[in-house]
Image (cartoon, rainbow, N blue to C red; front, side, top):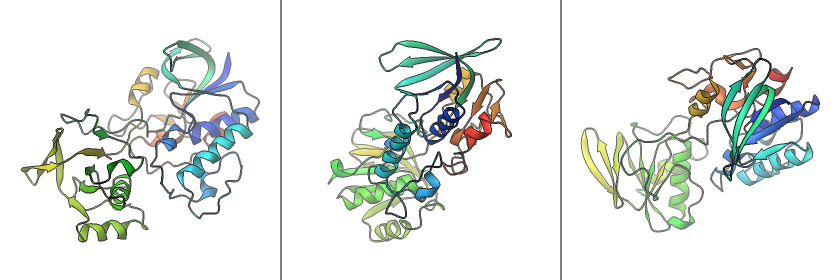
Length: 317
């Protein structure tokens, strides 16, 4: 019998694990991917908006010679945290369900090889974030291998027709890097202008490249279908086709509602924000708490690493 099971090995989950370890609780962290799997899936050359001190957990310094750290530095920092605190992480074990008993909870999990496992605990913390669950466009052809909801690097797409769907930070950063590396980029956005919260240091660059037609931008456009040779779009009610080799659908991400359903957690059907008690972050399921960005549902610009790293203290007292 564990004292606590933590589902999610992102920064919030690791911070909860540190708090559990400091209180000498018997715990384990489960994650269907690796340590900070979401950050691993960020673009390889990504620079964080936050400064190193805002990414720190466990009162452990994040030392960097840069004002804003890059992805690799952040990965190295959190791996150092796991080693420093000797955190008990069972990676590539996916939580798939929950059973409630009179005085304990059972978390049902599945390993990477398909083996079924059960963990019994008095308390469960769900810290699964949102980045592992992309918002689907919901059109024919979205399942083609040419389509990805994650952008990593530009090198393979030199001289190829690449469509980037979206108009916020992830889409703009992908479009810029692809353009810099010789891809023929078309940015397709359903709104009339780029997003209002684009990082200030990249906004002038994308505007300049659109003005010089180095990036073709199509606004007020929605994707209708994806074929192997083109993307079908609708612009102001009129259908059109865009020649295309690859698609990056950077349309945002959402919490894992299927897992919340499996756990019996109630949530807002529009925002997917789980219902919880603010003072201890406990959900409607007694003994099950939430931590990290999952708390804000699809409004993932409200809860960050810096304002969720103390959730473990809130939950575990």
